[in-house]
Amino acid sequence: MPFYKIAETLYSIDFQENDLCSFIVNDKEIVLAKKDNQLFACAAICPHASFPMKDGYISSKGFIVCPKHDYQFSLLHGRCMNVEDYKLKIYKTEKRDDGWYVEI
Image 1 (cartoon, rainbow, N blue to C red):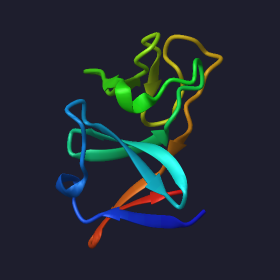
Image 2 (image 1 turned 90 degrees about the vertical axis):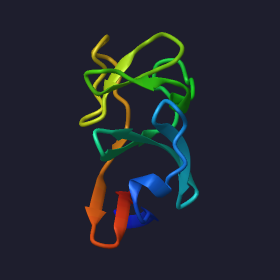
Image 3 (image 1 turned 30 degrees about the vertical axis):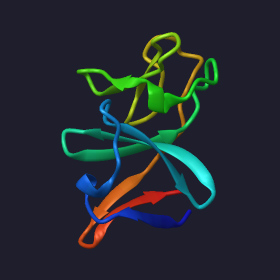
Image 4 (image 1 turned 45 degrees about the vertical axis):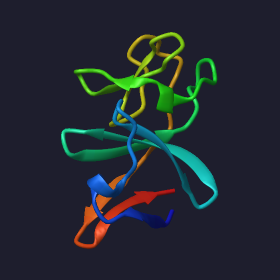
């Protein structure tokens, strides 16, 4: 899958106060998450109840949390920490000399 450049720096991304934002890459909506000066990317919709992940938050342990039922998903591998049956699609991000890229 190809990588797409999404930003020069983390600071040029328009994150909400919750360090999440919706982003369109190659006609696909994803959610970008900022945690400890790292960029993560995941599916825009929770696989459990189809709520927008951008309206959730990032827990102190680094999980993205769905706003509806507080299901927590790893930003590294997408596994749900509450229920084994759910997995959030995670997209690879990469910091290069000229900016941040995501693989879609």
